[in-house]
Length: 152
Image 1 (cartoon, rainbow, N blue to C red):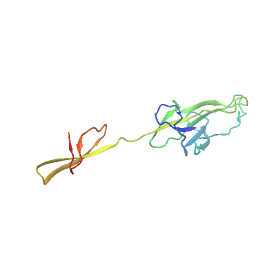
Image 2: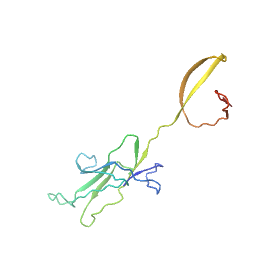
Image 3: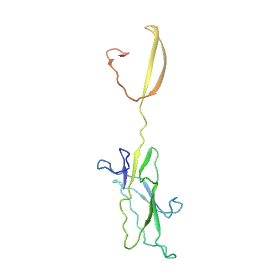
Image 4: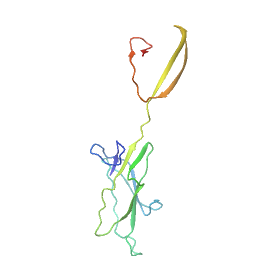
């Protein structure tokens, strides 16, 4: 599953829903130089792959797989703590691998506040230029009855 990790803790909580339209890759190596399959998450964030246990009969061991997600702009991966799941070995005895969940927290830019400071010796001007500053917290007492609010 691919989920929206709202609190960024790397664990899926009941209020954290699946994310649709993400590409998940099944690879033969952890760097994903050899992509074996890709899947796109459905409306619930679910993806799946179908593989044949030990598909490479030229060697005696079972083939390991690695599962990775394709990152999207504006998101940070929170689960797994490594970039991928793996090595995962699929055998006839262990043919269904579940709970390979990917969590991502969406990056939300901090809001900003535009300020305009009036410097004047008369009521008609002049005005200084405006500036934009990040908003950390706003806590003021203002009088909204005039065009230029009086704040204390």
